Image 1 (cartoon, helix red, strand yellow):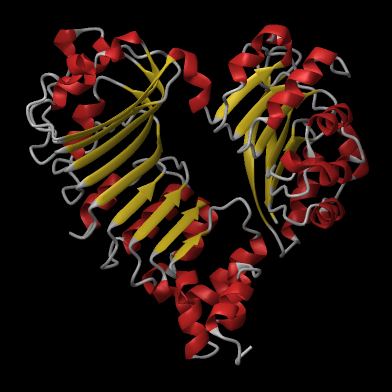
Image 2 (cartoon, rainbow, N blue to C red; image 1 turned 180 degrees about the vertical axis):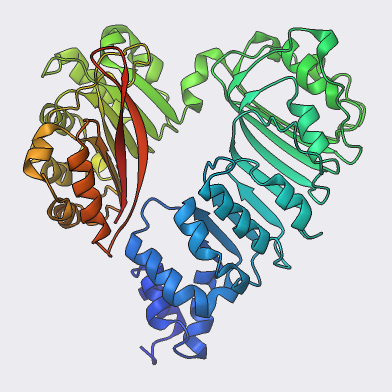
Length: 510
């Protein structure tokens, strides 16, 4: 390979896994190092298709030697937070750090995150910090250098942090993905981040209008703020009056650049001049406003229950879901689909070019796989990377009856490999038939998974029964497997007598 031109080497390298490539050819000589250096600029360890073995390769053999090339690093979970505490100081040129995990104050994971942040914030060139939510704010405020100017929160609930006293004064750009907007949101943001120049707010699910004008907090907009991005993605329609009174009027005296995106707008938006007439400094305005009849074109996830659809009338409501990526599909108790149901689903699934995630709610895995076989084209099925099987009652929050996992079929994994060969994520509940086949160990089953689904990296087994022996046996077996990593999640399920019992999910990283 020494005699091949650089252009041909780059073509060959496209067929290698990035970490195998860096481990095999990194530091081989100056020429290979120069060619491979860009492969180290951005490392994402949160990807669903990352195997545990490739993670270990990066952590043990690549990061300690070549970590100074990193510019962007993305981590997720306590395991990664813990391991990278001893390495983060090596990433001296790191510019963007993402830490994805919902942690709870006082927990071990919170402590791991706080320790990792303390070290990362001392990196000279770190300019952007991306978190799931604003955890360890005092740590950020205390240790952030003047170069840390951008803060991104990926999955914040309501941004309610009344206890925070020390502002994070270095932040100029703030991006907030918010599930629930409150009347106190703006005052909280500007209290913690008093020197903002650019603010991007995306409200994901819910907006609660201020009901009492006299009890709204006094919002002091930073004088430095001149660029605003507002995005409304919640299902509840947002009318122009609320938008103007609750959002736009607050910024009318100083915003120079405004971007407005509304996915569920009412008719008042036909006259944008009324919304913007009071802006005195506006120079640039960009917008994407969609009316009620185009809701589905902006959806990335859709819940579809076959029991609640009139198939003769409703297909036209769904035929524009061009950006749909995740589908939650509830099958009814019948083992076969009616002709109308089959036609609707076949046409619908074939019209989703970006669909890669499917969750099915069913009571029988064998029946549902057979149904899916008849619905997916070969082209569509190869795009599927994430597949989740759930209890039929799981998607009904009002149903407190005992859970019954879908019947496990011994051919499930083989059938899945034929149907969705490119899966990297799989989840299903543990039925008694599964326990009967694998009473004490998961090793044989996990090896079958790897053989039939070679791209699979994440598997979750939901142990819904009160069978402590099975859980203990599986944990003991997993502890003996050095080629994987696992975590557990405690879950509560309704019992026959109206009480709740504890069970566990096993999350296995292959």
